[in-house]
Image 1 (cartoon, rainbow, N blue to C red):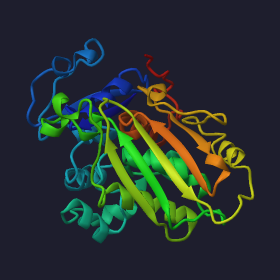
Image 2 (cartoon, one colour; image 1 turned 90 degrees about the vertical axis):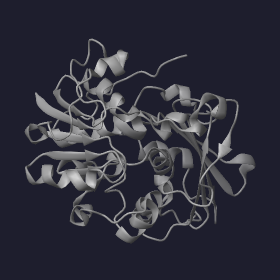
Image 3 (spheres, rainbow, N blue to C red; image 1 turned 90 degrees about the horizontal axis):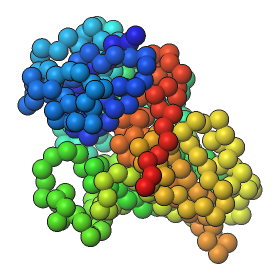
Image 4 (cartoon, rainbow, N blue to C red; image 1 turned 135 degrees about the horizontal axis):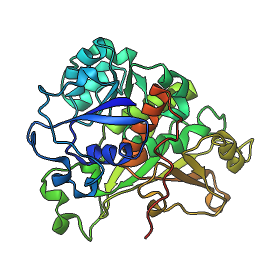
Length: 344
């Protein structure tokens, strides 16, 4: 039984990690930290975990995280880069669900996250936690940078097209829509029901910090520069992301695009390429670790459209983190994640 710690267990990502790990079968959560709620029971804050998690939150300086085999950081940006190196030096594996180790160019990272990096040596050593692309590297990793939620849906939707001569890599567009849980569990006026309900809006349209993360991965795969316009939107639901991807063509595809996607993801347990004419729904992945997608070419014109959906708290965060944990600790990749979506 592997020992697991969670730093920052009071947010939506933290509780989703606990929900998934509680029925994993190969791990034991031994510490869940919180500065503000130390001493209080986890199931008092999250009654859905009653009978599943019998622990209290522990103050970070009192948690014996060094005894863990792996520690998840479900913390705001800027925390893991300060605390993870000490654990890594003691042989503890780390998965960071924030953005501290995602972007390799530290100048780009500092520009988007507004701070200097506290452990730059570990940035280069961190493995990017997208199993569909870096599975072998994740197995041997000490530190994994879990991808962002918009990033996961967008990147998986575009990967099979990268490097194709008939794709215009300079004018890609990602129109992404996310539920309110993507903003985290904090009191903010824009997230109030009376503010977000019955409304729909774009945000960060002049530039969003997930854009350089997406471009970094796509450029590495395509082996060329990438031009991506990325615009996120807030929609009045709790869970889910749908991203509509618009891909201009510069020539007629030399392969059947549907077959190209099906072949690319044929062996992937958590990517579902739907039949032609399907329209993925966020409710079809609610509570599970799947990314579902469908391919369109409207009116046979010179633009492909890919619709990609995930649950932002599962495949977009905690589920993908557990998928990475399974690879790092030698468990079957699907262990604890063979979940059927909730419906209705």
